[in-house]
Length: 267
Length: 256
Image (tube, rainbow over the protein chains, first blue to last red):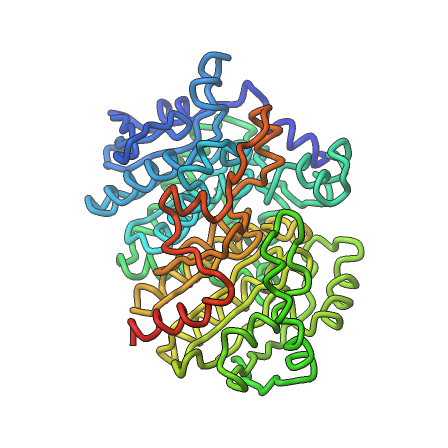
């Protein structure tokens, strides 16, 4: 499959949304709103739920399904308040020793006037720094579009997985083509060059596994989360923190070379 | 490990003479301060003769096998006398020892790829080991597109290392210079214990053009400038270039 087809798949309006993942994978969900600093951002959806009877904190980008919902959640593009809300509930998860599960699906952080005014850059940077120190298991699943710092802002995890039709990239292919070739129409070519498919990212060692979409997607994700939790549950708080730190510390040339002889976690 | 070498080479001295004209460069929107380079900056803030650059030995990086990327970097390394878009080293400022890094926007707009991310991390780790403060002058167009997802990962990497450095008691001072945007503003640039900015520097996550296209209107004057950030509570102080050394010395003194 061509990279651009993956991009279009990842953006498909009919793909499951965060609300459906939460509904199908968890029970007893209690939604938590607000950054408690003055704003609520519906483009981040999250709260507490049970995963096979165990309390977890779950959150992710919310794009919405209907036109009205799209508008209300700004098409899944958070402002700083969204990132601060995410951090607020993640810190709470750490306090109550709950694993954190995040779902990534965003075209990017919102490039707007108010977002800049209230510190979009600081909010994202703050999340990256704080997530690296969390003392509970953090699992991220890229379900659709994982675009730029807006995706990474909730994705500094011990285990990062991608659905096979998801993409994860530094920028949209349109943006990439526009910056490097001054021609956003060359997006198909950009998608190819950028290496943004699940297979590409697995080869880079950026993700830990690919979740197959052939059969029931929810049961495949359920299995992957269970698998990851079994491994992460064996680790102490300090070890979880250290592992996550090391995972992101070594995105250098050496890491690249090693990732070629990678480990596959088969679902 | 890092080699610390004496790098008072010709360039270091050559640029010194240009400093006199630096004031006219404070209008970044009109004149991207081209003439005021990395080595001028170092000469201005570091005590004379005290700066020793870190030398790194990285293998060539081109994860996307992007056409022309390696050649471009090699050319710029020659021209700019640095590994990537940053020069880092150890120096004294007002007699206080510190690690100092200065980003070089003449090198691919000081975009962040693996090498730059690694230099920021290694500098912070060097400061950690040697119990020194870490001062960084930022300037960047954002992530290095040519390195794709691995440039994005540098945001998480540098943020994690800086956080660790701070958690261990290290003093981290960032000076945001024109322009500091994108992946650099949304990672190590905005994590300072103390955040300074140069007058009129453009600082933000999204570029002004992208924002204008998104919201469909012109941005108000002064939007995303240092003064705007000060007004909204995101910088400790705006510091003129002439005052920079004095202010940094004072901050180092206050933490010594």
